[in-house]
Amino acid sequence: GYIAKPIDTRTLPMRVRQYISGSAPESASDEAAGLLEHMTDLKERFLLEGREQCKTLTETLDGDFDIVSARKMIHNWIGMGGSFGVSRITEIGREISILLAQPTLQKAGVRDALEKAAAAFCG
Image 1 (cartoon, rainbow, N blue to C red):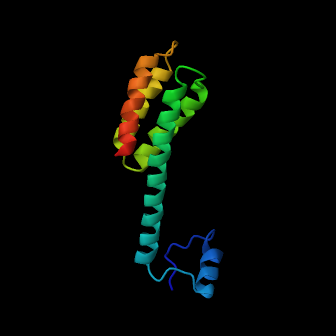
Image 2: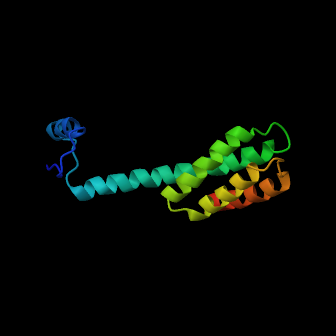
């Protein structure tokens, strides 16, 4: 096994336990592959949840639309879209964020933008 330098003292005890128990990654490439798989899983979950959130927001737009929760959700889309390299979601999220900041809710504009977001979450 190995421990990359500089040594992170916060994770050193965990790494030593992994090595002793035999569950430590075989190499840096194994660790990178595991991280890549984890990131891919997170991205897929983000895309799935985004599709569901678009549907929920669209369904509630004419009823009990919670603008505070919607703003938080959209804020997350903007950041996560950038983190996962899905810039279209980030762009649409910014568009929706601007619409939600207006003094009067522009339902038609929000609905159109949510339709674009749903398509972006589908790939």
